[in-house]
Length: 123
Image 1 (cartoon, rainbow, N blue to C red):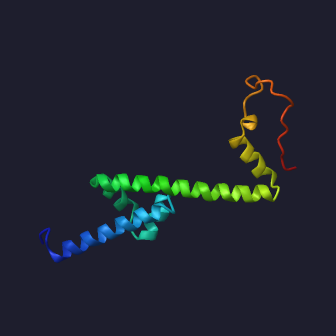
Image 2: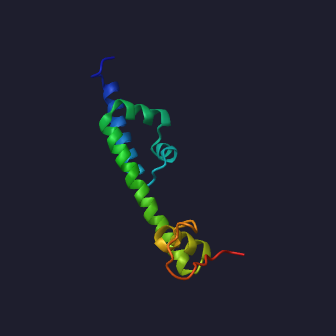
Image 3: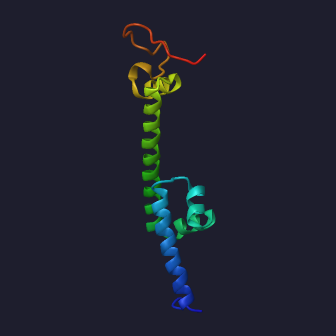
């Protein structure tokens, strides 16, 4: 069977579709194991395609980064929802990562900026 056989053409068409589907899946689910299972290919196939096809490599990496951004946005939204419900752990998490006053500097590194910060904890 040559490269132009109907069998080979069918395989190529299926690979193109699977690659396209995988790129789409990565944009919403950037976890390789989950994404390849959803598309119905193996991890080995995914990594082989990345090695053999530079364009696919770039597209898949970009899609994974988009998916990570998507998940981060969803996660932040959930944290904000929990903050609105006065959940102490989420309040502390948000402040530690978004407010310079709470970003975990050691006592020696902290500038004298007023009263001490009290972190809320669950007891």
